[in-house]
Image (tube, rainbow, N blue to C red; front, side, top):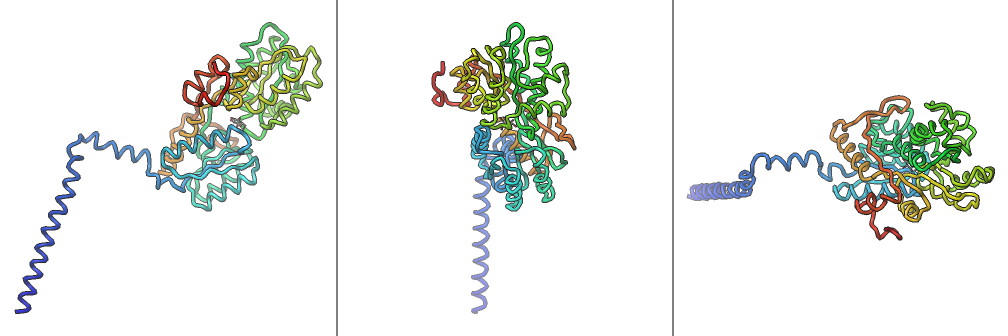
Length: 397
Ligand code: BGC
């Protein structure tokens, strides 16, 4: 009797469970129904978006970024733009600075490897010295993306995101050419750091435009005997460029640039001055060099180039103290780097549009265009475009 009632109870429980299960699956079906009514194309979209934009957790802690120094606004700008893009995508990524020191840079890379990253985005302080850090990453199975500057002399680089650096130099030089009249115009040449591959590409781009104008007498080089010795050579070898750069390098350092400009002005005669044309490699050095030339009473007018569209130089351009800059939209470079990192994380090959030889291999690369900015288009290119706020500057027209 007792057995029979237990049997009935068990049957009742089973029946109840089946009823509840049926209700449960019915509830699930109800939530699925709206999806079933959308077209298959619409329904496919979220899946596609997910695969091109992985979940934040899939990226968190798997990518690390190493930038060269906080002492130059250019790299603080990159940090800010990385942070903006990463926050928007919900990615948690660590950004470290090497403070101009290749040993610190290697320690940063090792730190990220220890923390378990799978991709490192790195702007080398010194292109060749960074090879050891890149190789350490590869040995640990970590992919390496060279960001803006190429890591040289190693096969341990997977991808390179860069601006068109040849165009940067060419546009700087073209600006000087476009503002020079007649012949015998004094030309002062300055370059970046010889340890930075870009310094060669910028100079190469500039030389291609300037050399014919030196050969035809438009310009006369005033501050480099090495450049004068090679002024009839249209295409310079890397060694020849190294000879010139060795004499006119700023090392990307404001004080070095200022001291070199002052030393050049000290030995130059009054005839070497008047209206002068100055190839300055970037904004930071341009401001330092411009200040030195502005302080020389024998300099009646100067044209000076730059690059990076740093805020301080944008203000200098508005104030007529720097002639031009080459605007490199860092947001594009940042997006290219993040897309490449995500592709590598997913085991894919990032899209490349060519390659750069780093002395050992051709590194697949993606390259972004650059824009010449001077007083005439500074507002349109940098303010109206939303890159900077008007309130960051004074005297904007
Ligand atoms: C970058 C420039 C920068 C310079 C100094 C170069 O490699 O391309 O944008 O001004 O380094 O940091």
